[in-house]
Image (cartoon, rainbow, N blue to C red; front, side, top):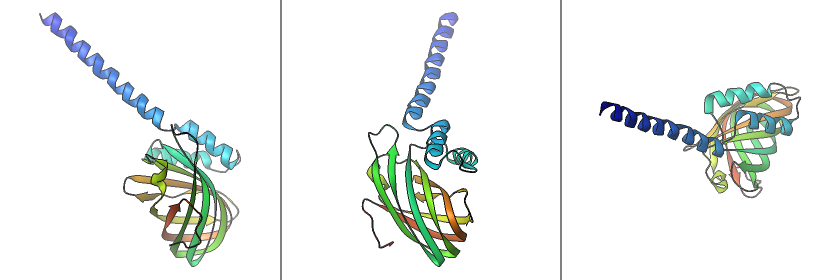
Length: 190
């Protein structure tokens, strides 16, 4: 009798153990691995992007596996008050095709200069492509002299965006602001 119960207990334990890998597999199929993101970012920025692997490693340590990313370009400038404009393509894991996205936003802070950047934004908890079209608040610290890669986080409810920027120009300082993601290009940053 106790031998029969032991076998049943083992069978239940083995069944529960099989459930955990299945959940992990489902999550892995809906998110990008660190290797997939690093390969995509290196293709986008070019293999010579200084510090890219370190930045990707840092974001994965803090936020885990993203379920999408945006590849785009932006320009920004500031003298205390700043503006940022950009556009790109959003790709979600498991979704067909890409979604065109534009962003614009103001900032205020101790910030001066201008830069042009390539932007590779990791997305977290973004379930549908059209869920991106909102305002996302964030804090940004920039130090672009000649080039380099930096990252900041933008949040709205449970969605987090992690834009990684590799830029050229001269931009130094820190600011607080938001980016509004939209379906069409807008000149009004508000």
